[in-house]
Structures are given as structure tokens and as C-alpha cells.
Length: 450
Image (tube, rainbow, N blue to C red; front, side, top):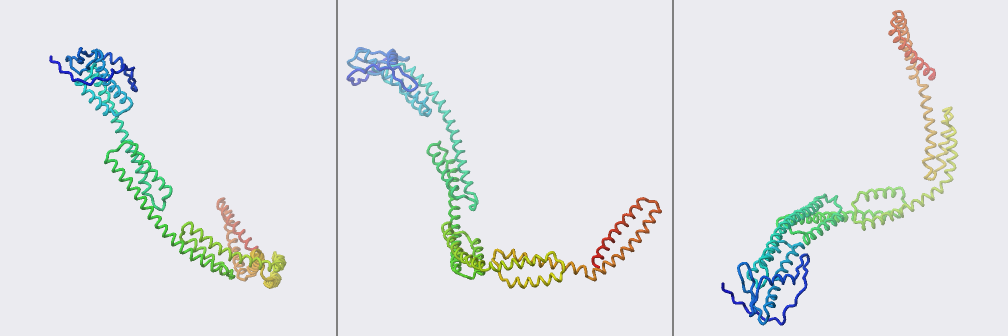
């Protein structure tokens, strides 16, 4: 077998120093031990030519001029150990969670370099190590793909929930939407969406576009409704402001009036109109109400002062009427109707002559006198009923009819007794007793009328 001519390489200034064991996270490579084992898979001649020994024979890997065979072998063995360390690094990356496909690619690339690598070492053993690494990385890649797919499904579901809530907010009746809270919630949902896009798994393009389209449409619909709602609200506020400004102007024009009776009613009408008018903006509504209320206060303060002065003036009248009312109440209960009528007529004349009383006492005083007048009227009605000729005649005729009916029932009763039927006797007795009781009551009434 022909031996390839080794390629000369530059001579280093000094031989590499022996290195202690190197540790790569997870897998540890004992550098010096690896170098010693690697040397066993090569040889070097006195000219510095170095060969790696494989199952297929020797292969020249390079030349280390002006060095001993041991030094030359050690140099190329160290280059082999670098490949071992690279394999160990890939294993550690896989254990640390690196994408399996990246480890597979790197391991295959490293493995492909082994047949022509200018190193001395157990190339077959390293290739087997890489085969195991590639297999493990492929299994990891499958698991990672499954987890990634599950994560995508979960992310899609989370975004679907965001979209569904946004669509629910957008579908609400504008009149029932709490705009501040709902707007804040929609912004929170948008923030969650951006966080998912930034740090979450990437969704398939079609799914991402479909969900984003729905979410964007819901946000646009909500914003459109919000603008329409507040535009209409501004319109209503403007109309409310216009109406209430007019009411305020009228209220202020009446505030100095002394026509207390008529203007009081006008203020009530203005208040009714105010309640029916649309609301202005909160700031305008509060300011207009303050003016409206101030105008009312001026008017009603003047009216109350006027009433207080009048009431003070009427206190003397109240004392007089208190005495008159006491005399009227002394007529109760009504005895002689004629005498009571004459005395009450005098009392009523004195009552009118006494004048007005303070407002707070009007109802009490008038009610007291009406009670006496009502008692006299009731007594007159009762007297008339007792003396009414038609009532007497009706009572007398009814008594006569009852006497005839009682006589007939007495005959039936005697006949029933002679017949011996107890039930017939009992029925006849009951009918006779009822008719006699009726006659007794009517006879008492007739006596009262007489």
C-alpha cells in the first residue's frame, strides 16, 4: 500500500504544554488521559511524519519537522482531543436544551470530517460516539417538535380567548358600555397580545393572520362605537346646555319679583322643564345649576322674609280666632239645632272679621271650624229624616204588611202543630220568629220618627 506524502506544516515556536482535565458543563473530558489514549492510534517516524492507524490501515495526517516522534504524535493527538471536546460540547448543549436539529446538524458535520481529519486518535470510537449523539439529538428534536406544537396550540387558544373577549366588548350595546373600564380592558388585551408575539411561540401564518384580523376588527368596531357614542353625547350635551341656559336666564329675570304667588308657580314650572331637559356636560351642568339655584334662592329668600313679616302681623288675629274657635267647639255635641245655628252664624261672622292667621296655623284653624260646621249639618240631616212624612208613611205601610204576614204565618204554625210534622213545625216557627223580629225593629223606628 502506497503511503501519501505528508504535507509540511510550520514548526511551532514551542511544543504545547500538557493540559489538565477540561470540564465542559455536564460532560467532563480528561484532556491528558485522552491524549495518551489517542497516541495509541498512531505512529511517527524519525523524519517527523505522523500516521493515524485505522482498521483500514495507516493514513498520513501530517509532519512535525525537527521534533521527536513522541512530540509529533502528541501534537496530532491533541488535535484529535479537540474533536472529542467538540463532541462533548455538543452533548452538553443538547442536555442544556439546545434545539435538537442544530445538534444533529453540527454532529453530522463533525462526523463527516473524521475520514480526512489530520489527527491521531480513535476515529472509529469518536464516530460511534457521534452516532449516539445524533440519535439522541434526533429523539430530542422529535420531543421538542411535539412540545413546540403543543405550545403553538396553547398559544393559539390563549389568543383565541383574547379575541373572543375583545369581540364581546365590541358587540355590547353602546348605551350599556362602561367606556372607561372597557377601553382600559381592551388596552390590556392588546398588551397581552404583543407580549405573546414577542415572547411566545410563533403561530402558523394563516392562524396568526386570522386571529389578528378578528382582534383588529373588534378593536376598530369598539373605537367606532366609542366615537359615535361620544359624538352623540356631545350633541345632547350641547342641546342640554342651550335649553338650560335659557331656563337660567328666565330664572334670573324672576329672582327680584315680588309677585310671590304667581312667580312661585313659574319657578315650579321651570324646575319641571329643567328635569326634562337633556344633561349638559358635567362641568356646564354644575355651573348652570348653581346659577339656577342661586336665582331661586334670591326669590324664595325674599318670599320667606315677606311671609315672616306677614305672619308676625297676623299673630294678633290668631289669638282672636283661637278664642272664637273655642266658642264654636263649645256647641258640641249639637243639642238644640236652631240655637246652635244662630250661635254658629254669629261665630262665622266674627271669624271672617278677625282676619288672616299665620300660614303655619291656617290649616289647623280652618279644620277646627269645619268640624263644628259638619257636626251641625249632620244633626240637621238626622232631624230631617226623622220628620220626613214620606219616611213615616213608608214605615206605617210596612208595619201593616208585616202584621198581615205575621197573622198568616201564625195560622201556618198552628196547622203544622196539628199535623205533627216536627220539621214543618220548626220551619214555621223560624219564619214566624224572623218576621216578628223585623216588625219589632220597624216599630222602634216608627216610634223614633213619631
